[in-house]
Amino acid sequence: MSNQNSVVGIYKTHTEAEASVKELQKSGFDMKKLSVVGKDYQTDEHVVGYYNTGDRMKVWGKTGAFWGGLWGLLFGSAFFWIPGLGPILVAGPLVSWIVGALEGAVVVGGLSALGAALYSLGLPKDSVLQYETALKAGKFVLIVHGSMDDTTKAKEILNRTKPETLEQHK
Image (cartoon, rainbow, N blue to C red):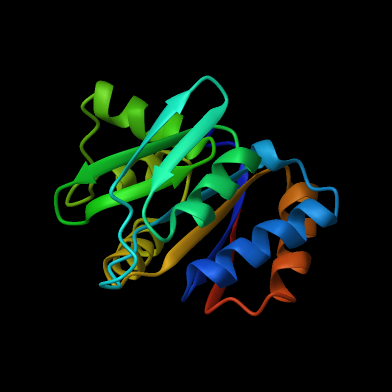
């Protein structure tokens, strides 16, 4: 998939990330081209766990509605414990790329399995480190992958949602 383009936005809260996903959905964007990564360390908002039964997701905890809603919209979901990042929740096709990095024992100097997956998609290493740092700080990373037209359209839409940062990678 490294021949695809990506747009990556960082959001401070799960509410902002969810609003951005819904904005893309309202615009008719293909939800199979979106991934969201995050963790939530606010003391009263821990996701305790989840399980997937076919296409139905069950989540415990106050942010369960957020993650459950995203998992209903996006293709693929997982919970990973990644050294250096801790527990992260991932929704979207990025799940497959992380699993591929783990199964292939991909090691990219100093990057986690998540970082290796992002790097294998063609994101520059310094950007990958920026996204990992955002996750460590409890922020949410929204990744849109696809053709140049897809990512250009997504960037225009996401720019209106006022992300903390928004970068297009070609």
